[in-house]
Image (cartoon, rainbow, N blue to C red; front, side, top):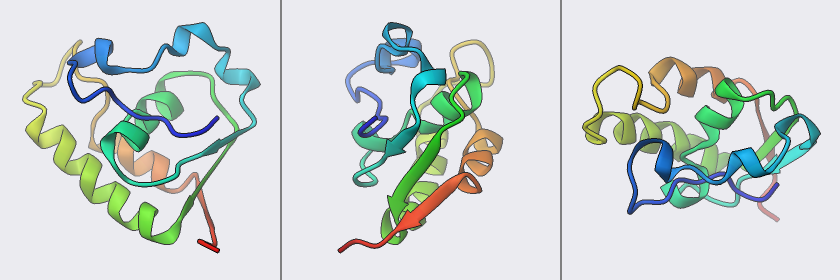
Length: 105
């Protein structure tokens, strides 16, 4: 699977890709191309809330910024803890240990 982003013009579950149209258990590899929210921000949801168990790859700069971008996303999304919150800081932290680094070149 290439990228795992959120639609920036939608809120909550409506902002996610159509994960129900695929079987997350069948995805063997997820490659995140860069750290923009429309390319990486649904990764914590996909990894922690579905049955995905494949490998995740991104470059070192993307992984470094990914953490900051998503921590900020949680803070500014304006969604209090509850049903509409897609993921939290713990979910982001859990994904970090599952990401393998690849060389940019």
